[in-house]
Length: 179
Image 1: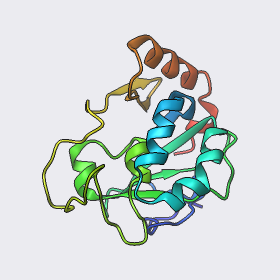
Image 2 (image 1 turned 30 degrees about the horizontal axis):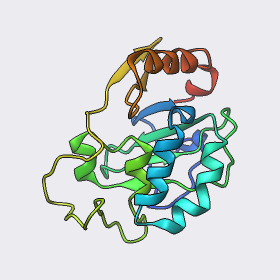
Image 3 (image 1 turned 135 degrees about the vertical axis):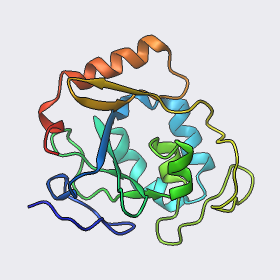
């Protein structure tokens, strides 16, 4: 049964229990190459979170980006049907980042301590209220396939690789329709 209450920071939320009326975006984990993963490990201020989950994330096929309409939080959630371990926790990003359009990628998500909700850049801490250009680069892109919206933003990936990723997801729509 779907809940109408948005999850709290750090909650593990079953895909079936996501609140109604929220946007869900999916993307394949295989698009995060070794260089990106290495950057994630080296530059994330929350090293414990990265250490605990990076191996499991690398073994997954896909993640789900879940955006709550009421609290303005963007959360990465395990997606049943994609082989993601059910005990993976969610990661939260700030409403400000969501407004900037950079909250849906994994590098952004793991750079937040979901207990203290503090944001830090590569070099120093940045206030959640401070406006700045996100260091990853380009804004995210969205592509709709068969009524499903996918995040086509992958750092350091060519247009062809992005298209292949989208085609990969389009072939596995069964786990994406439980909205």
